[in-house]
Image 1: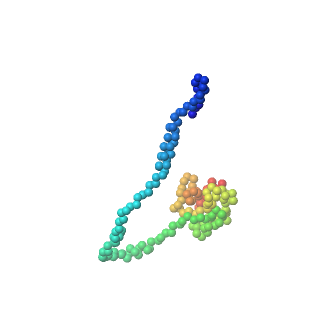
Image 2: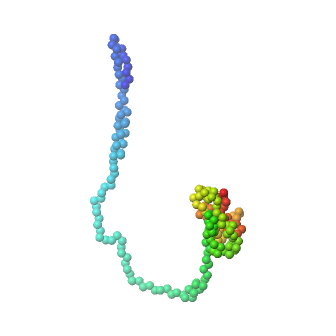
Image 3: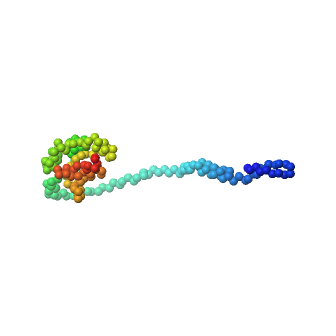
Length: 187
């Protein structure tokens, strides 16, 4: 409302102009009504009145038929030749020295050619405290320092032979045949 002044003869009259501001409250009222109507409805699934009862089982019982089974003749000569075959034990990868410098695999469990080259007095060295905290901070574990890996698990590149341990750590083979953790992990 805007007051305007008018002079009519001697009288001084103040007239108030009324503009139609009724459109705004209508829009606000319509929006609130729509909001209340849409939020107030709850859709509850109707209860079924049709109750079906059956006395038959849900799964059919298997029919038992008398079937005669004839045994297959076994050739005794074949059975004897199969037992003579040698079962070769496959070596598995083993942790030789863990991250704390402890000897996990003794020399007796390693193959002879590798056990002859391995000097445990030199190999059983732990990570330094700084290296250990660096490994724990970056990888959440302290990996083993030295591994023994059989030929079936070894991968070869131009740099040398390597193995990936726990899909994170690369180990490289040295002259003694054992695999050492790559230095980039702890330096």
